[in-house]
Amino acid sequence: METNIDIQEKNYYFLICDAPAIDAKHRIDQLNHMGFIADGNKENMVNYFQRFSKSKEPVVFIFQNKIRNLSAYMDQPEFDKLGIKQSFEQIPRLRLSELMKQQFEDMEFIGYNSLELLPDYRKTVGVCREAIRIDPYNIRHIPDYMLSKDTIDSCVCIEGNTLQYIPQERLNAGICLKAVENDYMALQYVPFKFKSEELCRMAVKGAVDDTKNESYHVLAHIPYTFICNEVIRQFNKMSVSGEAMAKTIVNKEVMSAGMCDKLFEWDHNAYKHFPNLYKSKEMTEKAIALDGILLAYAPPKQINEELCLSAIKNTYKAMAVVPVFLKNPDFCLKAVLANRNAGIKNLVPMEIKNGKNIYSFNERLEKILTGKVNLTFEQVRNLYSGGSQTFLEVKSGSKIYSNSSLFYDKELNRFLIAPTQSGNINQVLTKDDLNRKKGRRI
Image (cartoon, rainbow, N blue to C red; front, side):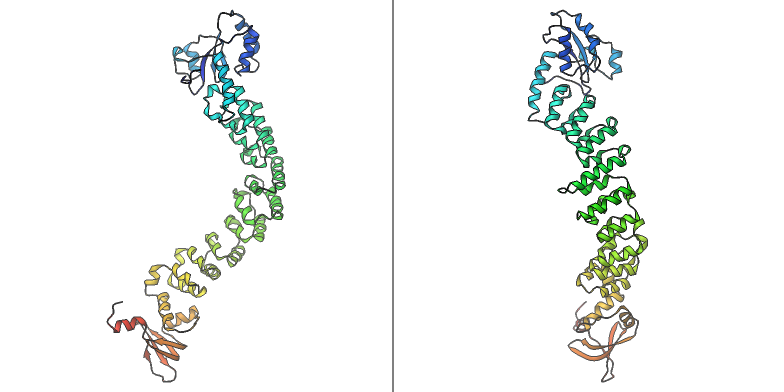
């Protein structure tokens, strides 16, 4: 058979019935075997084929793999109704004998290749049936007009997930039921109008019985809150984490306050996936106390300085998710005092590090205090505002003063020290001051 035949996408051509036939009934059987005769049309064709002698070859018009006209002649208006732009002379002519031979070869071909590789006019009923037997997923390569009820039923009963390749207008409750019976995850391809309570419970039963796969993913496709509330308890007993379940329920309208409370009780990380509506102030505070990085998922209306500092106290990494509007010098100082991990300073904005403010003041202060001195924010603010503070040891250049009072002169931008034994006030020399004295530019 010629391989360069130009058969249009709509799949139409004149078929010359040249294969030997004993009589009209035999001819009809040949055409029926190829799937060209629509159900209930056999009797209408007997008279047509009886008119032809054994020496004359009948011609029929094939449109989308079905006999559309019992004649070799059609007017242009008839073609126009079918959306055919070609003229009568341009429409291809194929021979039945060659198509029958080609079908036999194609049935062998699809045993090792995808049905997708065949042009639509060679996707006969026999070829499609064999393709589905070999691999149900071949249904995605069968033209819509070739999909019979038997073909669809056969596919979903063998492999439920083939439901995704069946046109929506061809689906009904019965087909969806058969698909979910075969594979509970076929529920994801069921249109909403067919997702009955009965169907969802059938999917849930299949999921709970499946202990080898991540069957909890079925939660993403159940539109009933009360069913999900029941199922999460079953999956919890199967050691599925609360976070995994909360993340899976992508339709947040299915969630409820009670469901979120229960998931949070089992796993605080589930908090990430709750709608803000169900994140109470108490839940947020508890979540952040357990893992500060969860600050990133807190409702904007609940975020304040106190909550952010609580998160940073749990982990310095929470500084990275603190809103920009809160990151002022005071807050940054409170943050580094709340969590002494050195990594937190890398998360302080450069403009605050390099500016003249209470945060940079504290950086200078830490350089002249020896030992581990854990000052509070109030103590640093007191010094920065001109107050004094007594320290066991203060370093000034190469000297170390013991039991000395320290205060800061903002006008001079210098620390001053008054050793408690002598009562004299001395300027504290920081490393920067020594460099200045040596003529070094800072």
